[in-house]
Length: 321
Image 1 (cartoon, rainbow, N blue to C red):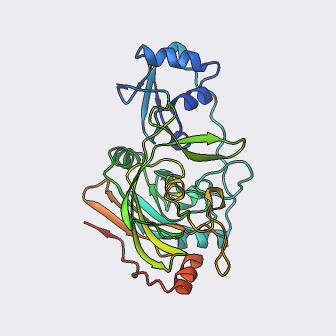
Image 2: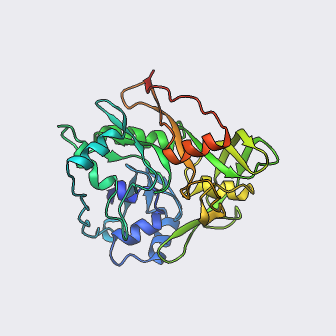
């Protein structure tokens, strides 16, 4: 048997798609047969083709099937003094094991077609004389701002990945939504599936029996509202599906302001940017205890809050307990 350790570039991909990408000549039919017979294992257990991978996962499969493709060269963003200052100004917290950034809206986490500047390409500039390059532990959509966690070494990355898989991480988002839900607090339990649209992807509701469906659960609570037109909502995802919060807000009938892909039209007096912010992350620290970090609102959301008369609490300092 051969073991493949899932790198940053494989996190959140479907198992079958990752294997097809990495192993030349391995067909979907062959993958399905190996899965049916238990010859492909994910973290030691039988699994399904649509299982979502996480950083540090271990995939075992027969050696005869596993000839990994050559690694693509990592795209490195050219840094100058100004860009280095901007990057370091994003740091909300750092210690020997983790770095937490306040990612600006509009900055991609990873590269892709037409994306020249991204966090992944700048991570060498956050070594601070450490032996290892920092590693992405989770992701935010390009247009979402807020808390982004990095591991400073492989050991920390594995522990944090385990925490995300084990659902011991508490993530809190703030959003401005168009309209006000009929019920001001509740849970959205709606499975989603990823739909590729030729160069882009979106999440759509899926029946639980759909083979591509992934369970997706989000708790929501309206914190304030302006008439019936806009509301400030707190979102707490229990799962981590692509575009989960955006798709769930749309399904609630109250899309996120500025989210044209999910029905959140632009509105006069507001920035056209997506009004979705990763406000807080509460996670087991790799060296013990818990780390809680909050990110201040981005400028476009602060301006929207002021216009609507919403008063957000001040950002608490990062704390480890």
